[in-house]
Length: 432
Ligand SMILES: Cc1cc2nc3c(=O)[nH]c(=O)nc-3n(C[C@H](O)[C@H](O)[C@H](O)COP(=O)(O)O)c2cc1C
Image (cartoon, rainbow, N blue to C red; front, side):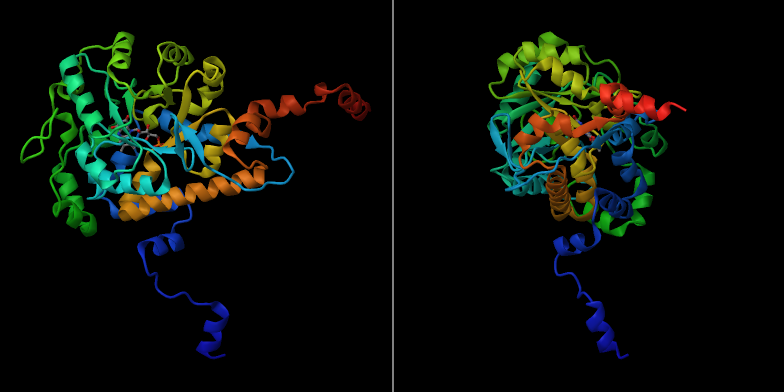
């Protein structure tokens, strides 16, 4: 057999013409993107994305809780499959958001701007971290039509708070994502061992590792130094700077306490939607609804704060039952496939949010990498819904609970005690 005969049989692919094409040939799952990110980044920076706090029990729980739910597809026709939905009064192309992640330019020089552009193209909202490494105005300019939310801590200093709110409103941020899980910084041992601090800063080890990852190092060195420009009330002239008092005191463990009165106060200061991020206790979800909060992001901060926490999926059914539709519910933590999103929606969530998955895409290939992750999740969701037997997000959210079962329910629901006929048959079978 000649080479041309083999070529005809094997349909040999030519070289990929674009980054998107290269990714579509090599990245079939978020896990594939994770491996690409691990190769591209210095180990200590990859660990900063990857790690959780203490024994990383919350981090593992976020994943394992998805495996405890199984699908029970229904047969019937599925037509015009549609992932679009609404969130906080606006349309989303799919019920997904990009969660805020601090220090994003450490992973790719275009950092937050690349993530924002990919989110805009995919038609999903983007939460920009207070500790973002790109000024909030520059992110707005990178994707002016993007639905963008700004992430802050509740602040005791109301002058500082008002300055941040005014700046975010001027820069076109539609909603506030307010953290209620950061009274202290989680004990992230991978980072300590790597000499990597929060807010992230570069140590000698990272520089040495950088030399071994030239593509990352070139991008890192050729762009602006890492800084946290949203922490200033106004963009300073020239150098972007500073760790302001709020973060310095938080990191030193002496942060002035804030409570529900500060959330009520925030409600009076901000006209747009407010999302409380980090709610897991159903009582807090009810309180949030009572004081007019628009949404909660059920989250354990991706397992990076308190260890041994319940996973968002563990508490979701309880929260959905308690808030009775008075506020919208977004879920984050451990989402790696479209089927995970389908499970959360079937349990009553309005939308899901991802952190690490889009950071893997960003580290692997910038904006194209984030876009690829979002495309994979949309394709996963479409296929999963088709196989499950639902055509729309509304149908999934209303009928979903009948299409999914927890491992603890699986035996009891199908047990012979369910129906008298089944019990009889079971007894007959068991009679020697
Ligand atoms: C590298 C990194 C930085 C993060 N920084 C922030 C942050 O600044 N503010 C915040 O509210 N959450 C932050 N988070 C948590 C995410 O918003 C989100 O809750 C979490 O990543 C979801 O879990 P997942 O990574 O399994 O999707 C960060 C997460 C990662 C991985």
